[in-house]
Length: 164
Image (cartoon, rainbow, N blue to C red; front, side, top):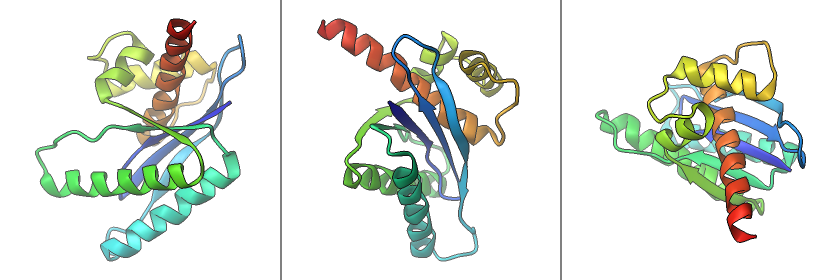
């Protein structure tokens, strides 16, 4: 099972692909950041993000796309851009036949680090430990995206246990 985690953004959209094995440690398959040129017009940037997300979905064929839920931010312009990027990602995921799950930042921190107040460095270190990788994930948007995928795997295990 592949889970694609997405930390949405218009300038930088983090992604992380995690492969889950029954009874085994999850494995990081890919991580990185999709970027768009800030000087380009908004419609062109959204179209570029859409193409790149579509490529990721075609390459990895995830069963689930875990997207960070957009919360209100003090900068309305940034919040709008993140919301638009998130919408593009979710629409492409559904069109590709993927389940879409949304998690808030505190849910991700709780699932990965054990408490909702964890900082970005703590999340990155826990992602490294949980996946058994030595290298740091840069930029941090990639680590956040991998953490979203791990959060989904933790929640999916709980949902399966409750269903049984």
